[in-house]
Structures are given as C-alpha cells and as structure tokens.
Image (cartoon, rainbow, N blue to C red; front, side, top):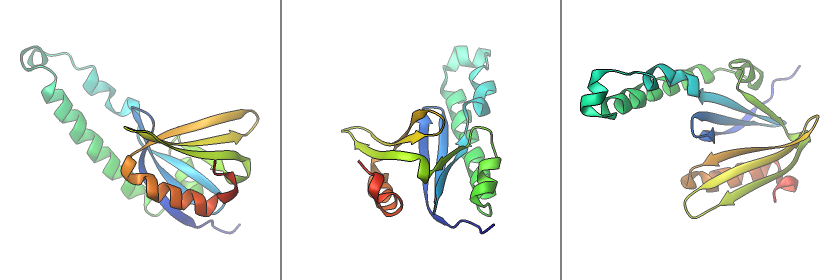
Length: 153
C-alpha cells in the first residue's frame, strides 16, 4: 500500500464551539484530526469553589486558556510524523472525508464568520460543516480548488 501525501493543513477549524480540528488534506481524502475536545476541559468548567464566588470566572478562564493551548500544542506535536491513516486512528472523534464520496464543497463567507461545508455520501447523504477564520479563506479556497475543483459550489 502506497502512502498518501499530505498536500496541506488547515489548522483550528471548528465543528462546534468546543471541538477544534486540524484538517489534513491528502491526495484522495482529508482527515479532520481533533486538537481540542469538549471533554478535555470538563473538570475546569465543573470547578465550584469559593474563589469563583469572590472573583468570578476570570481565574477559571485563564486556566482553561492555558490548558487548551498546552493540549493543542501537544497534539500538534504528535501529528507531525503521522500518516493520514495514523491521524485517523488517534481519536474516535477524528473524521475521514473520502473525496470520491464528496458531492459538493462550499466555502461560505459571511460578514462575521466563514465556513467550509462538505456534502458527503457514505451510507446516507450528510453535511459536515466547519467554522473557519476569515483570515483562512484564501488558503482554504486554494487547497479546495486544487484538490476538489469539480465539486466546489
């Protein structure tokens, strides 16, 4: 079996507000590799202590930010030497998008937000939608147009 090259990576896309992925675009498929999962920070959100009553949530938000950045850096370090198959196997929340199963790809540009949407047929037709940063739009358009030109809407 020949290894599939990774053509590009789009970091920090969000499926929801509390699940962050890096999207690895290969020659025949993409892997959305989980960088931060909602359960990674559950213990911090559940903390109930007297400091929160006195000082509000600011100390907790600082802890959440620090842990998030640390976890994301650690996971991205693990990603560095992985194949697409290895990336897919790292976490049960990772998503495989096989290009042959993609019906269409849409890059939506709003005033305040942007998104990347794949309509995919596996057993059923489904839509995978990821929020992207506005500063990523040109990079996303370039990669998607290179890899899936006939499927861009």
